[in-house]
Length: 339
Ligand code: ATP
Ligand code: MG
Ligand code: MG
Ligand code: MG
View (cartoon, rainbow, N blue to C red):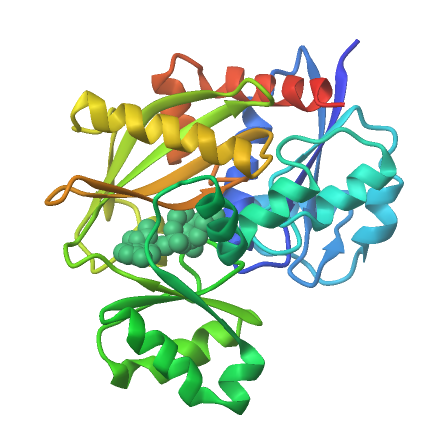
């Protein structure tokens, strides 16, 4: 019998549009002889859109108003064999939807509550990975209330890391709300921006060299595999939103032109991180490689990475010999096996 799959897309985060693009690709690729797929778009207001509005949103990228509370609909999604929550960022990739589906007893693709929540929060990720011996940049946490009540303490914390530094909302993706801060004078704007999006903000040191950016895909549950390593090259100060999503601004090199020993370290550290964070199903693990010093620093773990047919994660797995449609099929299999 065909498996009934509920594909969730859109969502309330700043990565709504990115999710819609990914969902279109997955929808087209899930083999119809094995799966009956129902897409549902969650609007930016967090509402579960009915089929006609969902179809329109997938087509045009624009979500209608109205719809039902996700809380009510997800809990009654019992008719499905599995859910593919193709949502990025808060209220999708952060354990919230995963908790709801867990309560409802419906298997779903990807990490559970713990792995999703810890991996979404860049500060929590850093703390867990530090205890697992994973190399990372120096960093500090700042809370919104500190920035409002004692901004100078936040400025000191930032200055201690040295400039340039990165300021990021702790729980977001697609570089939304991230700034590269070159001097103390640029701190206020960067912190205002990040605190406008999150209560928790991470301040991150930067190495004195512009690092190379390498990524690896992980697939599996308790016995995961690591893909070949890929590298991103772009002509911008950092890998910001426009560089990520404007056609032709960045190029992916798979496999990355790196010594074998470095690629192997990337894969080993990524698998260590996947296990330490209790991830499941899939993850794309991002690193900085400082060629001048040989340093390899783990940047972050994305538990629901971009998933169009040209996104890095599926391309990495393709290099491992797993086609896009085989990949989505395997992910559903891993969701069912996880129970
Ligand atoms: P994703 O879309 O991969 O989920 P994200 O929004 O979670 O991205 P990061 O990957 O943490 O954001 O950072 C985005 C980009 O900013 C990186 O790819 C890199 O170009 C730059 N960057 C972030 N942190 C640092 C750092 N500490 N040092 C140097 N560059 C950095
Ligand atoms: Mg990320
Ligand atoms: Mg992300
Ligand atoms: Mg990243």
